[in-house]
Length: 570
Image (cartoon, rainbow, N blue to C red):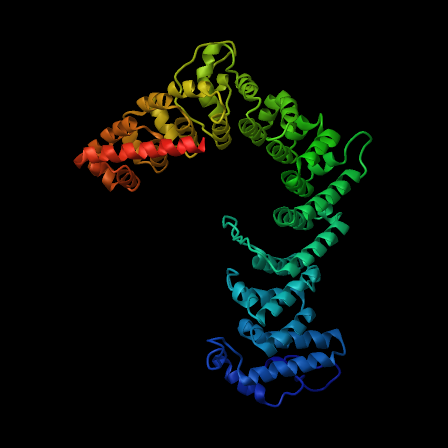
């Protein structure tokens, strides 16, 4: 097993080839049997294990490590020889008790790039094999020992700057591969009651964090730990959460700043600490939010909303205060800078302001009038009917309709276009206002082709669904009248079919009958279409054709149930 690798270099000061202690000729036998490892020695339910000769070898390696080395050269040669034997079977060695103990002791003697090589083999090409090793009772200790070597990531024996950069980055890349996950995968969270003893540990950890609260600001990774701890304590130990919130805020507001300027303003504009402040705002009680505004943010909201980083905590503050009187003060201050905020492209602030108006049922008329002015469709009054396309596209009247003058009242027919995500969210928020006649009037001026565009657009479909489903039966009927002739195309569209189903669920029996009457004319097309066939089944259109009276009876019953539940919920 060691015949070739151990005789690679001469021992310093010796006249013969270097051999591992305790080598007795078994190495060659083990080398010849190398292909048998992990096959014949299976146990523990199919678990791969090292053969006896390999176990003996790693036990002798452990004994040699205990003896120590005369100099660095001897140590480096020894490490290199052992890693050569580990290569190709790192997983089996790590998951064997003797191999695991030996590797744990060997890794601190390895260079960072050697540690990275071991991790690369343990994780496989994609890093997917890390889980099996990490969850193993022996392999997990090896992975832990390897990850601990990240503290030496800048150590390198490279001779050039390029080699040094590559060497340093190797271990970093492997640790990231071990810790990273797919960005689009939602974390699996389980809410359960933990043993009582765990709560004492949580309290101890919280107290430790409070003693080291400065890390929450100066270190981005530590900031995430504080955010997580706040979230957990908020859900499970509210009193502990309040203590931690108080301690962090005391620290943030006690730092030195320019005379007359709150130090919190500096932290709000910092990428790491702003995330922490967002969490603090979301979890704070009303009195803390009032103090935050009164002593630190009053008069600064528009400037912060214009900042590329600070605008996000302002959004959180606007959302958190929606149900309190504080929102009225925030609104009065932010409304003064709406056009500037729009120009800066920080639409999240505007959308959240509208959503908080809807939630609080306050300042809705002022919000709508401010938006009409911002998009230049407030005066003359004839421009009001243009508000929906302007809001959805976030484009002013002159630009959208290619008008040369703000005073001009000549409106040309422009096909609906440029619907954007934030524009859609803005209109969805406005659709929750008590008074939404302007939006509905604007919707009814859209051509059938524009309505179809709206229904088939990823962002626009949500707008159409919100406006139709929140309308009265009479208002909904007017919109559905405009949609006649478009139902088949909607049914055959991925997004349009969903809007059609939402409309159906909120429609009266007479409206459903009109929709069904149009759809059944193209039966073969609908039943063969990947989206429309679901519509056909959910609307029970076969019943509509062959058993009309029964269909009508079912729809009437559903309508009565829906109205009953609606009355109960109201």
